[in-house]
Image 1: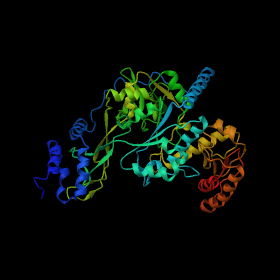
Image 2: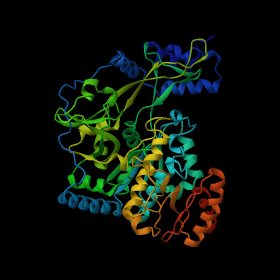
Image 3: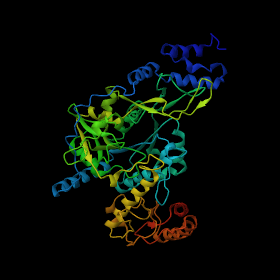
Image 4: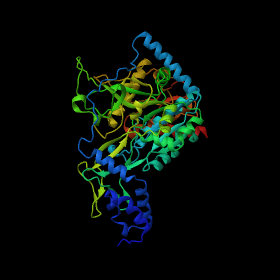
Length: 532
């Protein structure tokens, strides 16, 4: 029985009872001292009154919807270059962006707190093996893009990786185990986003994950602002001379990290915040929409957009609200510092989810239907705070195919196909014929490592091999660089392993300088041998 003189219990009870949440202490009597300490930490890290207020404002099925009656498409979108003058301006933007990278003014922020549970993957989503041929993880693909950019411009861009408390140690171990994928560990910074409790969607009661743990979930990618500020990271970036942050989410392997053209447009326009958009495929596609509201560009989360607005069409039949955000941004560091100094609080959005919890009898309940309400902040809600913002259109096939589901759209199948299609287009620009399906998509898995080429122009310069390509193909390069002879030897050794493992033999051929066509894992081992 709970003792009245249990000071820790009384302190927690005084925090919870005024808000009807004292059920969290239901099993206090049977908890071990360590478990009591853990539960106390959970409760002390929750502003119970705020959570209750959030629930009350979002308790109805519709929540408290914004007035979107005056919403319109964005009035100004920087288009894909088509005319000669637009292409000339694009070249100027590329030069401006390259200068910024070369001057050490750019850092990279990768949001990577998500788990791979929806993919059937036991681990952080960034550890998912997505390479069409190599099975490289999302983390490796992104890290190699940063590494390749560093080499190209002779810099060491800082990479900031946002995790959450549940996977922070796992992600750090993954990077360490893989030797940071060639990056300088001193330039890779891991930081944890905040967490908020989940509540019962009907009663607003805090849910328990275990007898001594409150059910918590990440507070959304908007939490990056608070953590960068409170953790001293904005100050550290300022001391390093960083002026621009390139931001993206881990689930999109097509992202052009530190894209010079995007950076150059941002800088040249004088924007404080810039974002990339693609044209939505359908009204129901789950993309936040860039719109104009109250005279300012804003992003409306797809779940907050009424169906009639999502389906509204132009005279030509196209979607009126078409500009889907792909969660790729550039921020002026000074803008983020101003938001932090002003104490800017981003609004919370509700999400109704299925969350396992402990029932009153102490048994774990796995609901079949959404039972819980979570609260998240979104970084894009900072957009109206920018004195000037830039919206840039890009091609979906070049830059966007996120990994979200185990099957269907945005699944490993569609992501690997999108990657293969992109690399097929690069090879075609090199004059290399690639086997294709009737619909024009690549018929075989293809992969080009960022360490060999970050874009088709670089591939043209570095690749002397001429194809054609009729079998699965991986073009890769390693650092420290190895000779063509050694690389091809390693590739030949591994073709046999790949053949026995997969039944199809990836093509191996000489390529210029340090590159080789090969199955990934064993060349990695061989490269380590050659560099020791």
